[in-house]
Image (cartoon, rainbow, N blue to C red; front, side, top):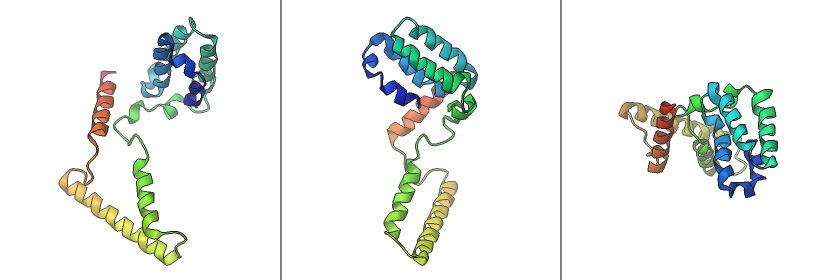
Amino acid sequence: NIWKRIKKYVKLFKDEQARQPLANLLCLPLMPPAEVIGLFCAIVEEFSNMDDKLLKLTGYVLRNYIDCPRYPIEKWNHFNLIQERPRTNNHVEGYHRQLNAHIGIHPNIWTWMMNVQKAEELSAIRVEQEDEQGRTTRKRKKHNVDHDIHLGSARQAL
């Protein structure tokens, strides 16, 4: 994971010259897949004039994500998913928390089945209402909506 590696170089984040290339390295998954290799080469060129530790970091990224990756760039790249899917899994965690709150600890099979059926019914009703009304029944926070709009406009600009 790139972030785990970058955390080792916290002192370098204080260096104004290294901060922008490090941020660019973290943004590679948000760039168009066809441009990732070219952008990575530009980042390596910027790092070549700086600390040798940064070359170790770029070597790691090159080995694991660019040169001979375990997964192709299209698998770890998020560019095509911007505004298509949720950015977090908070909605799933919220659903599980709600389900656990209703069911309790160590339910018997019948209690569990009744609660899962009830949750499924409520979800179906909510989806039906959202389809009919053309909007979500749970309003999103303004800063999340603004962030999605900003990401979408940045994607369109590319």
